[in-house]
Length: 254
Image (cartoon, rainbow, N blue to C red; front, side):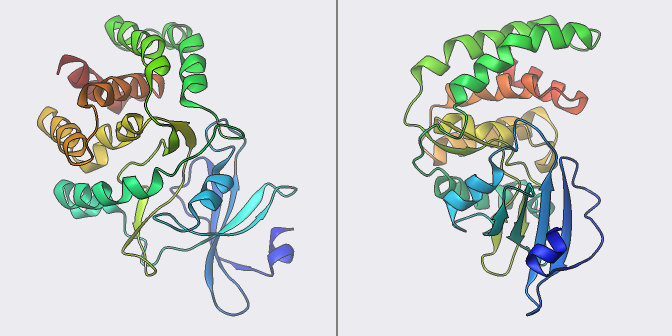
C-alpha cells in the first residue's frame, strides 16, 4: 500500500532498524527517500510529528505522513555515516551545535511530558528489575526512583527533546553535514536532553569518557550539570540494557 500511495521503488530494509521497518527507496524523479513503518510502541508514537515540528532544522525532513497506513517518508541521509565514527570530541562538537536547534519550544499534547514519562518509568521500574532476576545493584534502582520522584516538579523551560540521540542516531548527509534521525520525543527541560549522549557507549566506553561527555556538554550549553547527571542515571536505568549498567554506576558515583 505504501509503494502505491507514494509511487516508490524500494530496496532492502536497513538491517540495524530494530523498532521499525525502515526501507530505502526512490521516487519517480529519482529522489532518495526512506520509508518508515514504526512498530507499535510508546517511545516512537509521535516520531513523525516531532520531525514535522523540527521541519528539517537539525533533523531529517518529514516528506509525507499517512497515519491511516501508520507510515511516513523521510529524506535519506547520504552517505549516512554515523556520527560515532568521528571520535568522541568531534562528535561532541557536532552535538553541542545540534542540540540547541532541536530544543524548540513545545507544549505537551500530543507529545508526552517528561514528568508523565518519569511517573510511568517509576511505576514499574522495581517490578521489572525483580522480574529480570535483579540483574544489577539495587542501589541503582533506588537512585533512579529518587530522581524520578524529585526532579520532574522542578524543571526548567519545556522544550522538545530527542530522548535517543546517541552516536548512531546522527548521520552524515548532503543538505547539512549532520542530521538527527529516529526521535523518541518528549517535552521537558534541556538537562534531560544530555542523558542519551552521556550514556552513548558508541562515543567511547570508560569512566573518563562518560564524565567528559557530561562535563563538556553541560558547560558548553550552560546547563545544570547535577540535574543532567541525575537524569542520565534515571533514564539509563529505566532503559536498562546490560551494556549501560556500568555507565549508570559511574554516573551515580560521580
